[in-house]
Length: 83
Image (cartoon, one colour):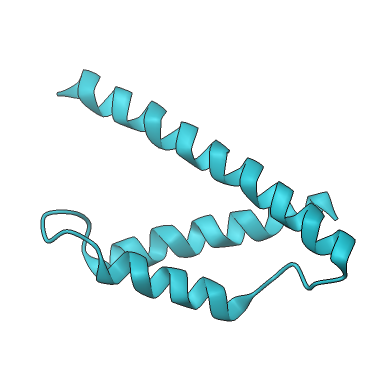
């Protein structure tokens, strides 16, 4: 089981790095077009969708919300470093 968790952790990290690369690209595009980098309404919609679509046997909604809030905060820092 520990080996399976290690594999899951590596996959999770890879997906988070992929998200960071996408966030950088979006930040660059928004900056070039004079669009604000942060869209709080979109963050709330994404968070609501993730929590709503969560499987019953996964993380509890409040834990999932905390995890994604941290991902969004880290993503904002990535964007800030890009612009």
